[in-house]
Length: 126
Image 1 (cartoon, rainbow, N blue to C red):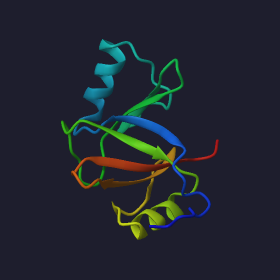
Image 2: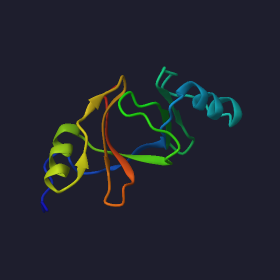
Image 3: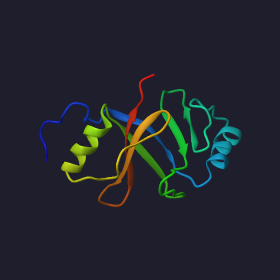
Image 4: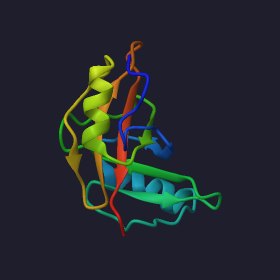
């Protein structure tokens, strides 16, 4: 395992957490209309984000590739450079998919040794 992390590969926090779904509109409506949460990223066909009062972001998304639902919540760990981070983490032994772009971020998903899902996440600069 590397002892010095290349620039942009250090995990700096959790950018977002939340569940995946096979029906984004239904799940967004639940958190918005039933629990009273306000969307902050706009509602897209594949999900929405809700920024909580403490600054934490909760998101609901419908993955375009390999959609799943009901597996629980996933943390998306913040990095400065998605491509460098994925390359470094793979070199360290992580199982990660290729990075992909959404309107607001770049993401790559993987699993830990116990089969739990996680994501590497880079927010786009506003």
